[in-house]
Length: 508
Ligand code: AHR
Image (cartoon, rainbow, N blue to C red; front, side):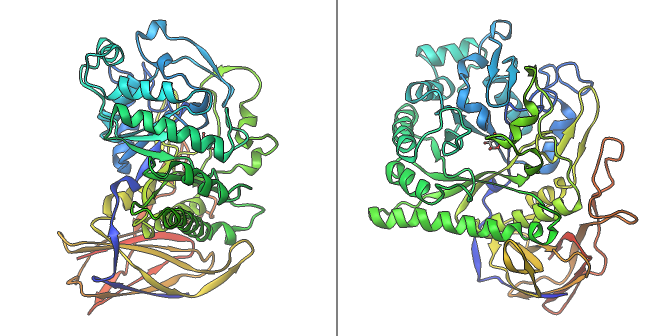
């Protein structure tokens, strides 16, 4: 397989949005409890934050974390999670059939986020609640003091306001599984009024309205149009959610998932811009891809919300839910999804991989035990660390292959960035071919690069197959190894990607 990529200093998409490397912590399964928070764990600090998970979060380079849901937020009363821990109520969380102890709430999350050095993206409940609860939460969190709610925050131990800028107006309100599911008109009206009231409390906040919970939803397109017609004046971003999986052994289509993500993003941009044109607005609505990942949902089908099925039965605290184990193929797909997000970084301003720990997550942890990196950890960690400066328009011409779900697709998928300060160019590339290596040649126009700084690749480990994964007992089976042979000759960089691989090359 051959692919040629042309990069030109003058052909940039825009700056790399730092919020593109976001993650998501939901009160779901073991993401919070025994994930980021486990008092008594050998690595836990005095607040119960697991240091091993914090270290991996830092290594991943996570910039922003969405909280507290997800489907959970649509039945959540934020007041339950503040105040003395001993008097917080135990509640049934219907979304995940779980007993929520409320031992962890807003203050605990803010403390964790500060320690993890990540921005907070806070979601409000527009399922069972509405305008008043949302504006009161903003006042509690962001108002300095001198009012009942802001003084309550101070009495609860936080003298300074939390200063949360980014807010989600509900979660997946288009989904019939959502508690308080609404039509586009119902949701649009509510989101507008909640957003207005929240901004009257703190004019500096940024607001994300719910788009569709997947491009396959029957209301996709119409939902975005109607919601934006209601909320255009108050919204800054519209959300997108997408999960991909290998179905029926069709690896070829699964590996092409980023083609679907490209199409999804471009469709939402078109819809948002159509509403803009209709309204003769100057403001542009950007995109918040605030849930994306590989998720093996089909195996759990049979319920309105497929994932809930394994959580039915007894009501328990933090049960194991959707702890997917990721393999080499999944890591290559995640690399291409990150490529897609980066390629669209002029309009996708925020993206959150779902979720951070244990629940469809790059990090796994066991109660009282270790934490480790799943295969999908690696593309995220390297791209968040090395996608710097300007996104380059990577013109790629690759051999192509046929897929059942997404038609004719490039075998090699790429993205690239250029950091003017350091003069470094980073190229991220995946070889979707299962059998053949890919020879990639990158024409570097207008850069002064003449040396390869670093090159690594994730592929099938020797003696294993594409289903190889990391487990508690073999936590480093799948990872990055040096990509030998990457070289620059004149203004052409060449490297060879092994079959089924994701790699990256940094030059200067
Ligand atoms: O991330 C898991 C779940 O997927 C979230 O709670 C929900 O928003 C989505 O459907």
